[in-house]
Length: 592
Image (cartoon, rainbow, N blue to C red; front, side, top):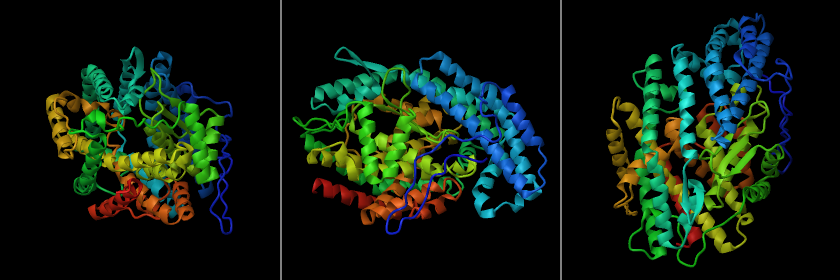
């Protein structure tokens, strides 16, 4: 499917780094009418019928057919994305919810049989063998995977799942607490966990946890529904368990579930001791005998919490400046998104939780959604999603929409590496050198402390989908066992068991994108590797970063890593090298 966007210019300047342009334009249509919009199935079906019935007698005609199908796919994909974006921006607007549900129940189910038929037409066509083997390898591999998984009886189930999965955001988006007479979303209220007054921190921590508990039963009911339908989808597709089905669906061609188990063990061996060290240092810094969960983000008495910005507007302007200093192209990407209003950054009531970067296949420039509340971790979220956005810009000129469906394990390298690269210019957010050091210290501690949570969520998912028919009580028990397995023992949770048992219900990935979480751990290793390069040769590292991201999904995962100057390595020994490096950089900042 041809993308007739303004071409992302790439040239090599002698003695300088590669340069790109963020002047990306909306696709100029050549197959669909310029004024065509997605309204209902009757308006879309003729295009699918034409593609299915078209006679293809030459390789040129086959490639034109692929381009036309790609254009149709881009238009429909973008329409679906906008429906979801608008709904997550305002979960209380019933019209927006109904528009999204209409697509999931009335349009998407009609598309799936045609998509399967078109996939089969492609792979069965005699001329398919004449397509450039290197150019189309990963694309055709993905097409064959889709054919293998497709079942007519799964269409209504997948439609129901698409609708149900959004209920998590609707439930969570309504959660608020009152502090000092003022109502806050849970994201906004979390800033009180940085308050120097320990009593304030504990009070707000308990308020947040109690509010989450109010919807425990609703979330359990929702998850049980999702679990049942997912299991049935896998069974219908001929799989004994959902794990194997989902690995195939996610396109995990380059590693097996055993690699995940090795990752879990490596985290326990090489990361937990560092996490314990971080929390022991925090306890000493605060002068506490016992570190409680409401203490982990706090500073000693008299030290004010980091406040890198006040509003979403300020966050964006500072992020643009930070990105521009790294490379002008990076800042231009955010400027383009600002100009066309493809950002919604501030937290507010009725907005879904979390953050994301949503690629828009026809418009070109993606959309960033987040819940900023003026905290340090909001900066991390912004540069993280900004890294995703740059990936969207870089992969956009690829000639087929399917070429831009890159593995999540490289997508998260784009975002997590940007978190680390951008630290070079965080003086944009912190003019005070001491505060800048605190911010970098916070970031590198987060890099380390995130690994156990990733392992916990991933291992929990493996337990869930390998224990058919388990009860809610058994699920809670398994959660606690896994949670304790990865506990470093430095934080005292006594008396907080109900909150601990409930902790998994806040993880949107469990509800909305099952098994999508280990990618963060794999990619964090890649991001640390990119940062090691950056420390040695900044421009070369950024060149590697851009070159790898510009490949989209046209190469295998190990090949994409090699293009970035990385080795795809999930081994414990590989993790040890990277964690030793991060720990060394952290020690340089803290002077320990």
